[in-house]
Length: 187
Ligand code: NI
Image (cartoon, rainbow, N blue to C red; front, top):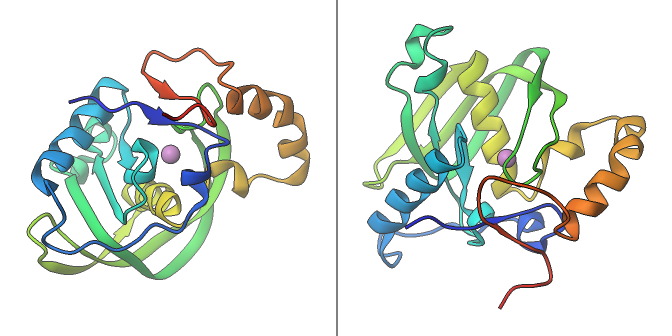
């Protein structure tokens, strides 16, 4: 099943998402649907609040970036109840996009390395370190379960320049190739 995507202006994207337990209803299906939704919308990552579920879960498939970073070849993961324990290294800038902020691409600066604790789809706990592109995507998705959006990382000048576009998005006046949920128009 392909879920519609929540967009800028939706309060669910501003909530700190809640941890889940093993017995979360239909978790396997939910994870499958998250990946399917991410693939049809051409995303590298997708967080649960983006499909209107305020839970601490995100999925990433960075294997498409493997031509530049070969170690990403098999990077397809589910992060449940993630907690970033440490961020370190030089901040570097990369142009980011977000399915919830359609048609906006902005340079975002983030630390190079992270250490993260999370549970996988079988609720096995992992503590791992990542750098480069993987660390960037993880930080972007982790932001989503913390109620943060990429636009929050921009300078106040950039934000001001984007304000009318963002306002239009929040009213659903935006074209996307994927289904969206217009804020305030939820059933
Ligand atoms: Ni995003």
